[in-house]
Amino acid sequence: MGKLFGLVGQPLGHSMSPIMHNTEFKELGLPHHYQPFELREDELEEGIKALRLLGVEGFNVTIPHKVSIIPMLDEVEQEAMEIGAVNTVYRRGDLLIGANTDGQGYLQSLLKLTGEDSLINKKVLVVGAGGAARAVAVSISRSGVGSLTIANRTLDKAEKLSSVCRPYATVDAISLEILNSSLESYDIVINTTSIGMSPEINNVPLPVQNVREGVVMSDLIYNPLETLWLKQGREQGAITSNGLSMFVEQGALAFEKWLGIKPDRSRMKETVLKKLGGQQC
Ligand code: ATR
Image (cartoon, rainbow, N blue to C red; front, side, top):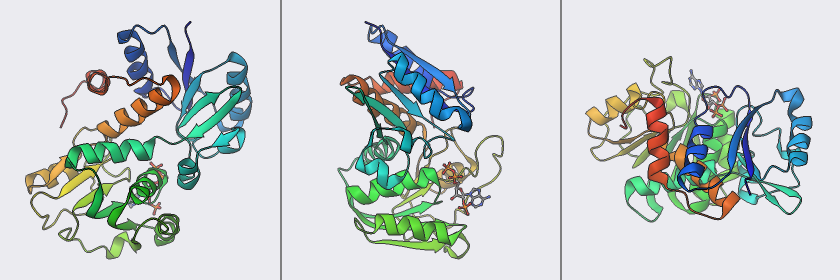
């Protein structure tokens, strides 16, 4: 029997999730459907009740509801609680359980890129301390990392995020201003801010100076597929990666939570790339 899945957020016009999941359902011969539900903040509570009544099997949550949905759920997984945000909801019996696959999605895509099993020997720099940074920093710390530095324009937010991560790893917080513009002491540098995202494609989150050859520079942005910051890094010999793999991986992990089967990640990536109309960087 066909099951209903969905996406809750606002606005959703540019979301790649519906086409990614619906194409995968079709390719796997599953009669399910993934439907966007645009809900304003003041409609969220009633909207979630309506989804329960409709018998929704699971859904994703995106901006601006990732935090405010938490009290509307029956349970929330520990990692999602620590991140402080839910991007995936699944059903257990009559209960709606909140999870966060953004952080794990990012971690898996990063490990694939580095070709290693863990980050245990890596010095990692996360730029930004907003919602996306929380998912990335918490998951990286929980998985074990050599050391983690969180740099943010507003130092206070970086400090708060570091204290969440500190039980798991050696973490320090610095202000973006005093971050040494030389990135040479880091193995992996991750931009989680929206700086460089379309349409403001001429901005960079921090200067790319003296990048060591072979350093990993990872940008969570995937529109454009190659930000100016990644381009500058690539030209200086960095291994660069955009946010598309994370996006696909968080979707694939949600898919697995809902259905208990592994979707074809390469095919999901192809679907999104085709929709974006570009080439992978
Ligand atoms: P998201 O959920 O996408 O992470 P967010 O929670 O609004 O979005 O966080 C945005 C992040 O980008 C923050 O770390 C923000 O820095 P502040 O905490 O100082 O606001 C950072 N950011 C956004 N625009 C920036 C800019 N022009 N310069 C420096 N940092 C910026």
